[in-house]
Length: 238
Ligand SMILES: C[S@@+](CC[C@H](N)C(=O)[O-])C[C@H]1O[C@@H](n2cnc3c(N)ncnc32)[C@H](O)[C@@H]1O
Image (cartoon, rainbow, N blue to C red):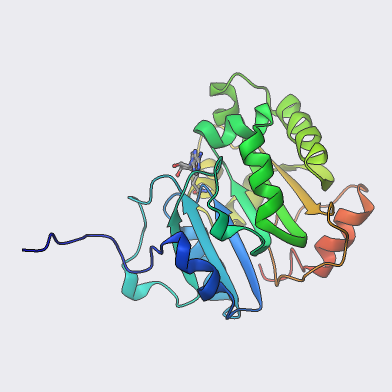
């Protein structure tokens, strides 16, 4: 008798993901996706974009395979050791409110994570990292210092990094992730957003349709990141 599996159909083997993603114009990868809310939202907003949620634990996925959009998939993987099948796939990537090894990997400049981020992306990949004060405090970091640290780390990894932006409650409320909502209505809503563009392999660029970002006013900052954000319409679809 065969053992039954409770694995939802939309959880894909890394081995099959590249062939599936090849059918789409753009590919977004959400590292540390948690319950997948962001993936469902992004897939629904842009049907021509493949959206892949990656997490070490996909036990909290919010929806059944049947109600998951065709252009969404989930992969069980460690962000610090991404499988080679994901390499060179992403036109956009997000890390929303990480904790655990994903967070310390960013702060410590973990070689596996940084190499993974670099090889995950196609030229010009847009990256958005969002960090919250509570998770950082547990890791022993203050919000401002952690932001500077991650900026430096990403620059060393070959990203052109935009300014650090404070995310207020309204920005958090607008961001379609479960942790963003929790933070927005919780006791400590302090968070920051760092956007970056992978430029190491040249700036030929591959456009993605959007990474949602907060609607707050931007300070002047990194010219390349700013331009790429506009081209990628980071704010356009929220
Ligand atoms: C606070 S939750 C945020 C979930 C989601 N991004 C959100 O905004 O609602 C942090 C997530 O990071 C995941 N995570 C931690 N370390 C990881 C790693 N090394 N690789 C992949 N995911 C990791 C955890 O499993 C958890 O789902």
